[in-house]
Amino acid sequence: MLRMPAAKVYLAPGTTDMRAGIDRLSMTVQGILDLDPFSGHLFVFCNRRRDAIKVLYWDRNGFCLWHKRLEKHRFCWPERVSEVVNITPQQLGWLLDGLTLTPQGAHQRLHYKSVL
Image (cartoon, rainbow, N blue to C red; front, side, top):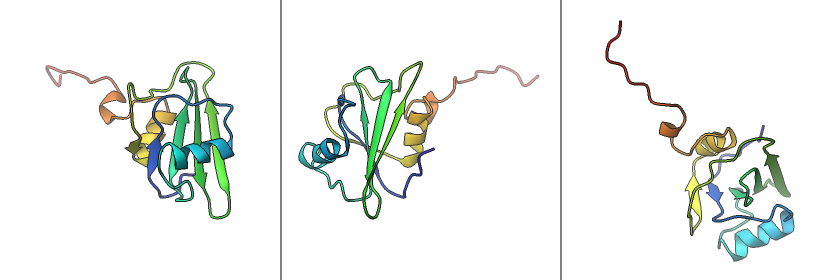
């Protein structure tokens, strides 16, 4: 599992070519997202098919790049996002586990009429 530093988490809008490595992703963070890639924050990118995610972050003396590809199913990536989305580390965990970014989307809501 990804060791998440105590930092902010940013989802890059749209889709990203998963052939991109550390250099291109860090340039994307700085040039397109207008954020500091050396901040220690997590920058999350998703491919067009939504079956792969890359997480880029600076860890004291170098960049770390974490890649997860699903063999089945798709990530619940935000729809129609035009700018960077700031989420919590807990929400990133939900995303990596295949859940939506809101706790309401994690499980079906149960409706009871009686306790017996």
